[in-house]
Length: 114
Length: 119
Image 1 (cartoon, chains in turn blue, cyan):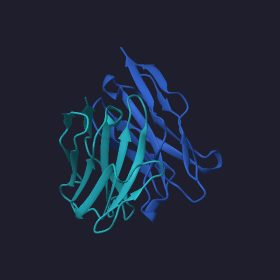
Image 2: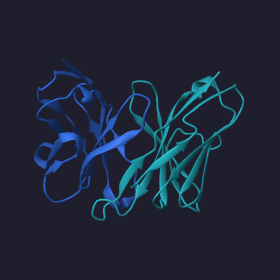
Image 3: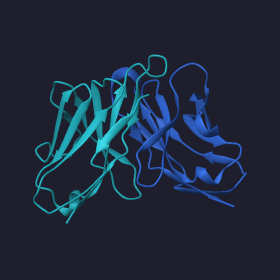
Image 4: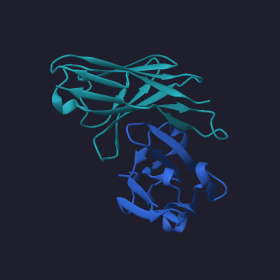
C-alpha cells in the first residue's frame, strides 16, 4: 500500500529564506509524486509533479522538488520565501496511469514572517 | 485550461435534509472524478472514485447509501449527502482526472471545494 509522510506539520521561515518541506513516500511500484498548495477555504492547486525522466522537477511560483529513489523522498524547496507562499502544502503519491486516486500526506503549514 | 468547478461553494442545511454538490470539468472531459473530504486542519481523505457511466467505488468506511455519487456525463459528477447530520459537516473537494495533461500522464485537477455545515 502506498503512503506519504510529511515531516513537520508546521514550518516557519523568514521572507527571503530558503523553504524546505519534507516528503517521504512508500510505494510498491514506481510512484508518481505531486505537490499541491492550498490557500484557506480553497481547493488544491498543483505546484509540480514527477512522473518519469528528470528527477529534479520545477514547478510554479519558483518551487522545485527532487525525486530521490534511494531515499524515497520528494522534498519541496524554494530558494527565497515570499509572504504569498504562506499556505498549506500537501505531498501526494499515486500509481500513475492506473487511474487510482491520490494518497495525501497530512500537510505542512508554511508560515512566512517579514 | 483544466478548470474544475464546484457548486455550491458553501451550503448550510438542517439536520435530516439532503444536499447535492456538483463537480464540473469546464474545459476537458473527465472519465474519472474523485471525491475527497477534508476536516479542519487535516489532510484530504478519499471518499470515492466516480467513473462515467458506472457505479462509484467507495473507500472502506464510507457509506455508499449516505453519500450518493452520480457521474452521468463526462463533465459532471454529483455527490448527494443524504439525511445529513452535524458530523457530516466538512469541506468536500472533488477532482477530475485529465488523461492528457503533462505528456500523457494523468493529472488530477481539483475543484475549489464545498463547505457543508449541518445544523
